[in-house]
Length: 175
Figure 1 (tube, rainbow, N blue to C red):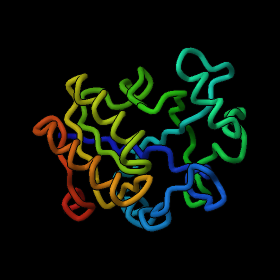
Figure 2 (figure 1 turned 90 degrees about the vertical axis):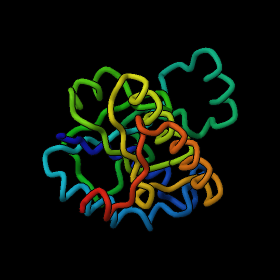
Figure 3 (figure 1 turned 120 degrees about the vertical axis):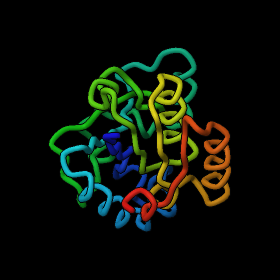
């Protein structure tokens, strides 16, 4: 089965140690993600979390807590880290990136997920795609969480969704 690699939210806002949303193991997963991106060739899509122009509903309270993030999509914090130069990105104002644009890109293929954060955007994307009937593989050592405990808990939750969701290592995916 053909598979598409979705690199979830590999953005400056999660890479920068000075950011309130810094993901501690971000730098450690970048080399594995680079290997995956190289192996998948043209079957790669990068996603970005971006703030809405005007938050609605519960997002209003969210952005009251994280007001620094109310910046336009072209702000430096929302750019994909310099290691990668994707020609385009699938942007979403939600944690989950399973939206019509990503669904169209995936088509009938399987979906392989890597990126950040395991316990938020990766988890939300994986479950929504699985609910849509897509075979999802989450690359455990190519994802990073808010902290190690949250990363592990998210992977444990994702394993509960087997066989719709599989958790595998980079070596297993590339093997």
